[in-house]
Image: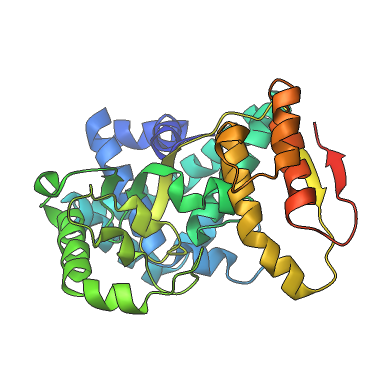
Length: 336
């Protein structure tokens, strides 16, 4: 999947942008600085809402249609000049070349993905899926065991509202950035979390996943590192544009099964949740069955001993059948 910086590099290298650079006598560093300001300035002036807000794909080059409005063009040039310290007139001059360069880069990326087979296409789809998961802190049935999206995000490169680029990762309180909007974000978030820690503790719902508000509860413990990527997760695009992310991955299981337990009532099913979680924790962490007599039944512990360490999936299913007393046999399907 193409990164934000790689995308800009392709735009820089297009014939349209090189022609502008030659005509205006710009070096590579000046052109790069201009594009780094022009892209966020375009987004900050409503590009996505204007081009895609109608709910249908744009016709032709979306940047050309966007810059066709004199008012928008002036606003973007003014914003880009403020971000870069370069001349506003200069940005008015390069916008047509930028629009053309963007279209060329988009076509080049599309051709590369198509010619390289399903690998790049699936990687693009995976990137889009993970972006959505980070935006709303997705979780599913397996999050009880493996955690939510926020538990697996390590670092993020984020485009902030003023066009600056921030890299969020674990930093100690003494190492928090202080300059610019990034520094203000660190100061504001940690101060709010500290000042409101008692309210956060009392009022934040104790549930697996919330869909309202920001994750300020991640910053109330002053002994832990500060990672603003955890604030971005679940913010649904309201705090910045996530350009890149580093995620923690888990080893793929050698065998996977799905088990379905049937109960006579919702009450019986709910009553089985706590023992099931204890069973899974015991077996999946490779705790010897004999060491957990209060969790696993005698029959299940005998199975573990007689088999020389039965498959963990078998142990889970056997323990669930004997301990939770479902109304019927457990339906099992092997997914691998």
